[in-house]
Length: 262
Image (cartoon, rainbow, N blue to C red; front, top):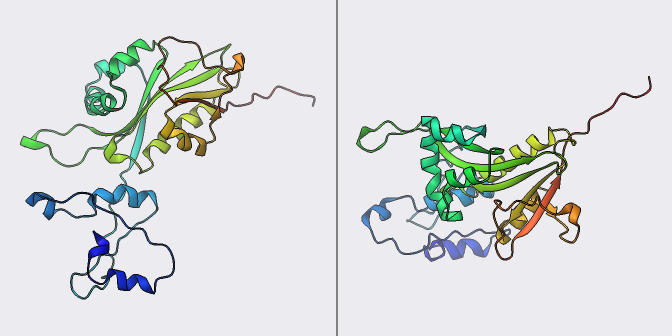
């Protein structure tokens, strides 16, 4: 680990401030692993705390060298929104995205993405967070048009419920802690806020226990389960809450002004 390298402890004796120590985790046994940048697995965490460059420890003398190359810049992203089941099944580029998303969807929810969208009905929609695919595939195959960075599935309930349910949020493990989940959530929040309150007055979701702080930072609050008017939309096709899950909501919607006295 970093703390075992020569000179590190003596450097820290006169240090005043905070120190973040990242452990690679587990011995590197293969030759390929030994040749890799030992920080590669920690890039997402470094980005999450706002680090843009890294200092490396010299093997001679225990001194810090000049900053190593900056962390790779996050790719330019776009959101493919309001996609219907028919779009996912018929568009070749979207089918390729579904293929990329399915292993992670199965990992988190143990289900089939297409089948769940079908079960949730014609009003359910999917939005993909993507970036342009760079690099080459094995055997010189043409890479997909887009690289999958995340998805969100949502459903609008019109009057009298006037709410939008967030059914699923998925970010691949390799892209977690890089802000992609927040990008998706802020997008759907702005979408709901842009609607009239007569159509959508709140966003609702069922949060896993470990995700509750994330949604609280986005101003979601617990739904009072003892108030029938605040209960989530009754739909047997919606995901059933897991133990410890919490129904949450965010009040939103655009106030429609009516003509007043001149």
